[in-house]
Length: 178
Image 1 (cartoon, rainbow, N blue to C red):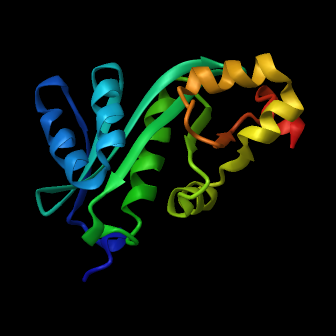
Image 2: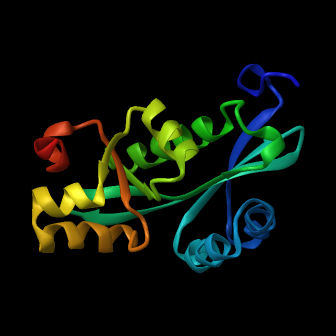
């Protein structure tokens, strides 16, 4: 298969309200019923970018802006790429595209969360410069209330890994506890 990163056939575009069914269709093929439920739940409250190869939707990133302990923060809610297109850099392109849109809106801190068994997601975000901290360490270093405030702002109640990146490192308290 052609390397998508070097292909002019890859297009990333924003999905508006009337064509979000494209992301729903993809998510139903990518996620478990649990994650599909939460993806659908957040869909009306978030932005979505879709990656298309030769006109076919092959991946997406769902993201939003929330206030966290680091100020206004871009939250990567869900990233999904069809299995046959994984490992070609599409997830990276989607996350970087979302970061670029958020930066244009003045957001320079980004976060995501996942479960510790999701090695693929952890490797993906690490490769993009995200720092990784366990929820256990968050509670230990920030104290219960501040850690819970962050987890609640991410809606990461079932996750045990928080990933974060900030262009303005001094604005994000998480860099001070590493």
